[in-house]
Length: 495
Image 1 (cartoon, rainbow, N blue to C red):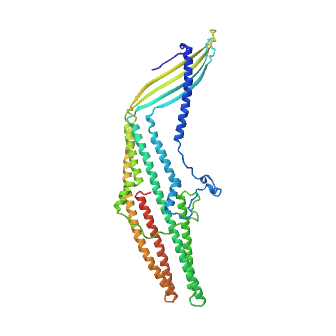
Image 2 (image 1 turned 45 degrees about the vertical axis):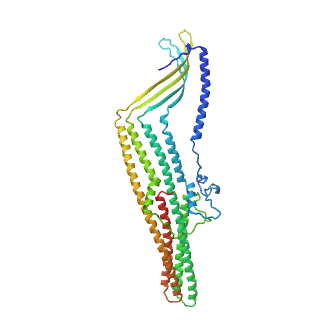
Image 3 (image 1 turned 135 degrees about the vertical axis):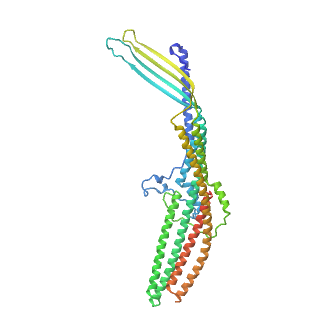
C-alpha cells in the first residue's frame, strides 16, 4: 500500500505544520539516539587491567623498575606454595585470556537474541541531475535541472524461521558454559604446574644441601690426609682421591644450582613476573617430611573427578553445542516468514529552461511514501547444500560424543595413575628414610675404621657415595610424593 501526496495540493498551513513537526521530532529523535548509543557503549565495554608496561618495551635493559610485574613478598620473605598459586592465578597472562573468552562467549549468547528483534535502517539520499539538450537537426528541446533529498526508514522483522533462531540461541548458551568450564580447567592446570615448578625448587635446594655436605666431608678428609701424608702415614693417592671426590661434589653443586635457577625461571613465568625470575631474597621451605596423608578409597576420587572435572564439563557442553547445531541444520529445511515496512519523504524541485520561447518555470514537489507487507519463502532445492550441511553437523555431533567418551576414560586412567603413584611414592619415601639412617651409620662406622687403618680407602668412598645416593633418593621420593599429590588433586578437579 502506497500513499502519495503532491505539495501543490496542500495548503501552506499544513506544510508549515509538517515542517515544524518534523524539525521538532527530528531533534528529539537525534538526542534520543545519541543517549541510547552512549548507554550501549558504556555498558558494552569490558574493563580490564592491562598487562605490565614492561612488555611494551623492545629491550629488557631499558625497562624502568616500576614497570615490571614484581613479586610482592611479606616481611618474612617466605614464599609458600599457596602464595605462589594465588599470585599465578592473579597474574598469569595466558590464564587471563580465558576470562575474555568467557566475555566473548557471553556476548555471543546475548547476540543470539538479536534475530528476534526487528532490523531498523535509516537512510538519507540527496541528488541533483542536469538535462541540457543539444540542438541538432533544427529541433528545439527544453533543458531541466532536478534536485531532491529523501530521508527514509525501513524495518525488517523475521517472524518465523522454523526454529533456527532457537537452536542457535541454545548453542550459544552452551558455548558460554563451555568457556566458563575451560577457564576453570585452565586454572586447574595452572595450579598443578605451579606445584610442579615449586617442588622442583625444593628438590634443587635439597640437592644443593646434599652437595655441600658431601663437599664438607671430602674437604675434611682431604685436610686430614694431607697432614698424614706430610708425616708419611698415608700415600699421595689417598690425598688425590679426596681431592677428586671434592671436585665431583662441587660439580654436583653447580648442576643443582643451575636446576634451582631454571626452576625459579619456570615458576616466575607461571606467576607472570616480567623479570623472569624469583628474587634472591625470597625464601622457600625445606623438603617436606615423609609423613604423607592417608587417602580415602579410590572410588571416592573417581566419583569426585567425574563430578568436578571442568574439562569433562567442557566436553559435555561441546556435545550439547554440536547437538543444537545439528538440529539447527534440520530446521534450515523449513520456511521463513518476514514482515517488512518502509517510510520515505522526498522533497525536490525541477527547473525547466524553455528554449522554444514558451517560458521557463520551476516545479516544487514533496512526496510521502509508506509501505508494509510480508514475505514467506521456502527453499525447495539448492543442489543438496542444506542436506549436506545437515550431514556435516551430524558427523560433528557424533565426533563430539566419542571425544567426550575418550576424555571420560582418560580421566579414569589419570585418577588411577595419580592415586597409585602417590601411594607408591609414599611407601618409597618411608623406606628410603629408613635406608638413609642405615647408610649414615655405615658411613660413620667405615670412616672410623679407615681412620684406625682397619679398612681400605675404596670402602670409605663406597660408603660416602652410598650415603649421598640415599639422601638424593629420599629427596626425589619425597618430591615425587608431593607431585603425585598435586596430580591427584588436579585429576579429581581440584583448583
